[in-house]
Length: 107
Image 1 (cartoon, rainbow, N blue to C red):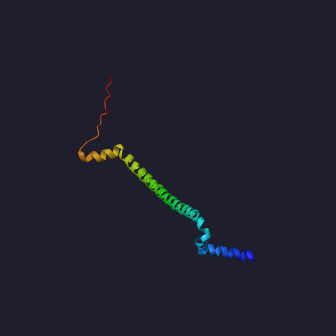
Image 2 (cartoon, helix red, strand yellow):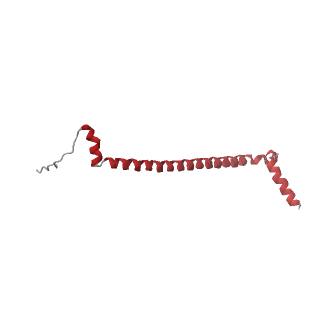
Image 3 (tube, helix red, strand yellow):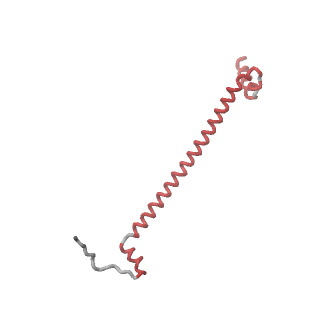
């Protein structure tokens, strides 16, 4: 029973900061600062990784959207290459389709 109250007192002393303020424990201050800096570095790396993951997801969605735009534009341009569409486009310029086939020149 005494052990449990000692553990509780030790934990509460650490949480209140008495461990750091004690003169006998001042020799551990470089180690404590090192551990705190490692914890802060770990937190920083975690936030950076989360930010990169969000950016990656955003870019994947943008690539998917651009792929859809590419497919749509490609199908529109493919349909414009048909002979009937080209004839309709140049009809305003008074250009008519040749009715005689081209002659092949052999040499």
